[in-house]
Image 1 (cartoon, helix red, strand yellow):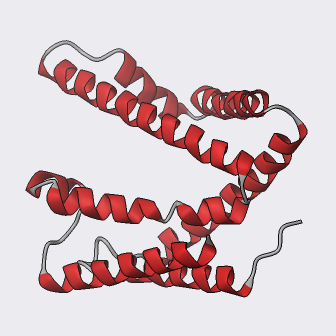
Image 2 (cartoon, one colour; image 1 turned 90 degrees about the horizontal axis):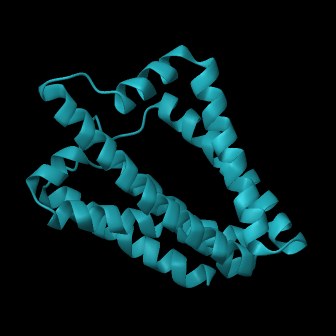
Length: 193
């Protein structure tokens, strides 16, 4: 069992405060509602269980064996969803077999964006699990708070189109709040490592 020090617990608190600050600024569309909070909490619990079980499997068998088996489990969940849930199956078929005309260009672009996003996500996921196999599960998961900084910087410097896609509002108040949140992320990361 892993035990966290007082400094690491303070680091987690800083990361939680940063999360709250990042979600409390901006317009009403970027703020959290209770449905989002509940879904996010359920997701966090499942990811925490996944991290702990993954760490246990990495200690029991070689890394790539455990990693590939976990990805096969994920693929199985996706296949079952496509077979059991009609809406999922219909969406998948629309992406894979676009209709003729201008919509096909949009579907091809969407498909390529989805595949590109999944490739980036897959590489990032592999890197997270490599870190998880070598380090502490709570600390590796806390380090993922760096994603906030990356999203903020990409949206801020990526131009108006990216800001609209990420629903980022560009104002002085937003900038100050997000910079304060990023400072909390840095503080939290320093304390947990």
